[in-house]
Image (cartoon, rainbow, N blue to C red):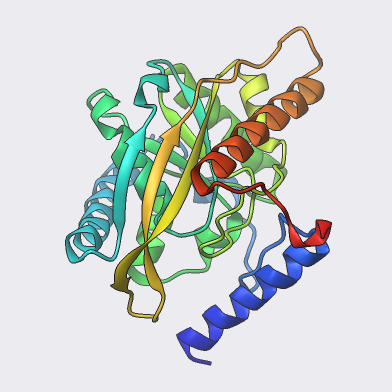
Length: 276
């Protein structure tokens, strides 16, 4: 199957899943993955080898994406709302439609980050294990925080998240869960990111990326999208409520902000095909 055929299949599944209201399901067909065990991941780079590989992965990732920007196949057209990025540790939520999303967010906030700070990205288990070569290096070591289906590994994950937030790091989580290629609409949110925010009393910074068509065509024959990134006012979770209730309330507020951003930018009311 060619790359174009794979992409067309993804677009077909996006249309089908929207019609069915399956907004958080994967449209990419991923191979089976193996469970990440505790000794396979170093969430806060305690090992010297981890620190070396992180520097290497970040160098390679930056070179990769900056080359795309130079070639005009990755365009960040505008950035708004940087005044809403706090100095303390925070969860940043963003819509997820391309592998470039995380670098777009990182490049936007980088001028505000203290020396030695990065954007940490929560990724799914399969992304940590299923790639090879340079992509595998970046998925494993470019400040990624993989989820795991192993309880002991997740205990280590939460400990790492607590450490990172306490020292003022920013953690990017995609609450839509699955990546839908070039999908412009905000999707209903899962509450996991907001439960983490409630657990560690961290603010949530909603970020939403809107897109306009450029005059360039990428190597797969799709129109290159120009990104317009906006960061919105922090959502502070209500610690007087049970964590699950506070998380749901914050998720609903985050979604409302995204919907307003979508409708304002595109000049149309948000309507899903499953509602028609």
